[in-house]
Amino acid sequence: KEGGTLRLYASFPVARSTLALAKLVGSTVAVLISFVLAFLLASAVLSFLPAIHMQEEDWLRMVVLLILFVLYLIVFAAFGLWMSALTHRRMTAFLGLLGLWTVWVFVIPDMAVRTAERLRPVESPVNLQKRADLLLWESEGKRRAEVDAYWKRNNVAGWAAWNALPEARRLATQEEVRKIESKWDGEYYARLRQMQEERRNQLRRQQRLATVLTGASPLGAIAFASMDLARTGFVQQERVEDALGQHLVYLAG
Image 1 (cartoon, rainbow, N blue to C red):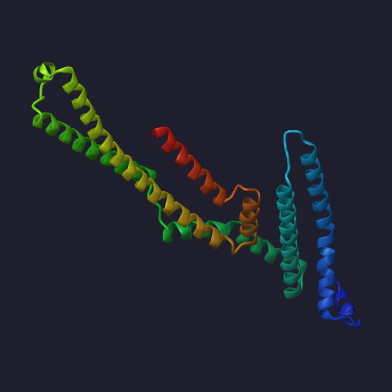
Image 2 (cartoon, helix red, strand yellow):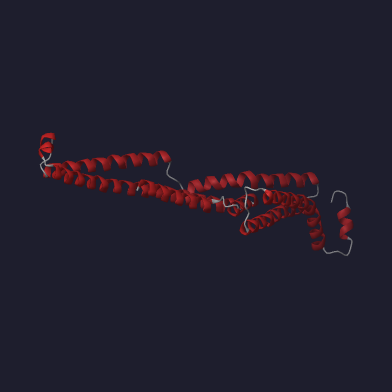
């Protein structure tokens, strides 16, 4: 528009859609060539590394990732073309695109996280630890009370009464005490796991909402999509947490 060549192009018997598509292709081909070459170089390095064994599914994920980033670059080029069509000067188009890029990269992700924190609040670790300490104190108090009641019912309160018991009676008494302690320990750990699971579910709901809101930005959408393809996203995080929780239960048992 500044140089006047657009009017010359418009005088030719060429449809505006064809002209816009040609400008879009021309502005993206140069970037895509360098990007695809870098991708092929990285793929070649991965295929020759002896410590990395790429499976067919892994290569398929990389191809899908390549397609997503190609579309991502095309989207940015399309917005550049759109902004150029709305303005009459290059500096105006540049400032408009800079503002749009700032909103996509900084404003939307930050607002998405803050909005998710307000709409889906998560209990703080400090508050959770306080509740866990209170639960432990209550559980130990109830356990001591039941054990003391058992001692009194069986007339074994005090060292003198305990030493007067025969060996078989001592073993039976110790077994009953262990059962009481095991019962209250089981109840404590069950309620503690429930509290931790509640906070974990709160955190997951907050993460999902933040992900959806961040998806309004092309950068956020491509970031979360690439994380899922690389198996480093929230779904894989939940699987690791589930496996870790089962492992801790196994160790506790």
